[in-house]
Length: 473
Image (cartoon, rainbow, N blue to C red; front, top):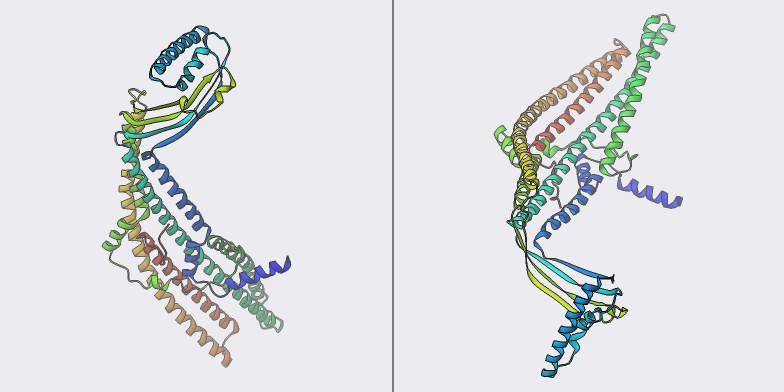
């Protein structure tokens, strides 16, 4: 068992070896993660739902079988017996005249035998029944349209869910990268502050420093300890959530590539009118609302049609028999005991207490609500488009400023390093300059990731996938 576990761990290490970039993470979550499996199950369920709705246009075939023991009043039984005996005698005379056998008299003899008895009788019947809608006041065609709408609605919902999953991957990726960078910066700050404390302690021991400076440096070092612990907590929490979305083990710590999505980020932002047009045409939430409104409108038509007549063709074929002995069940498929019928049936709900009309009114009210929401969603999309375009501009400007900040911090650190080497500088000044450079580098990383998020938001507001993915099933 230990060998198997070790082999599994080794295979996992091989699979997750190397760095994981953002594009790979998005693809892994969209195609292999738990959300992808949920989407696949939803697709299968939706296909069966569409098939269920289409079933209204198909004929309904059912089998029936009945068997039991029963009793009727003597007067009724006698009437049936007399009728059966009379018919049997008449048919027997006809058969004799025509030279035909009496094999078709069994059911009538069974009725005749019941005339003088008060005993219960055994009966059975079995066969098939078929019904096929002929006229349903448009309900069948409307149901078929609803099936197609439901299919489109499911695909739109799945695309929207997959796009939301992609955005969640980006958010958690950024959180993981920044948490790790901040943790590393905090660790270096702790090391720098320890060096400052040691230097001030030595200076105080040699009589060239003050006790207050030593205590102040130690208090600053102690304040960094909670920051270090919270940084480790944030990194672990973000990474576990990131791994869950990708379907990876919770403790997977594959190194993350910090390049973001270069292909998406390097795209030139289109004009506002073009972004707005693409958003109104491709947004999945807007499409979902439109399809849902169409579905409700068709449902209102069906409810209205329920007050109109329905006509269907019906047919039946089977066998039945009734006797006062167990012989009733002998030869259950005897051709002489057959029964069949073919015809047309109509059903018309003349008055139902205004149930269907009330339901139709409720659906029409829901449709009006969706129309209002659709118009409001258009205004919300316009706000999102403007915010996405502004965020992209701000992100580009922040990235340019962060790059200049790194260059300035690097130059300052080199200047302090030269002074310290020549003996005219202080160690604390050099360590502070190094800390400033690390903070500037952290700000640069944060600015780069913010530009990635801005590019992602601009693509998402237009309803685009962040990377090339296959169509939803």
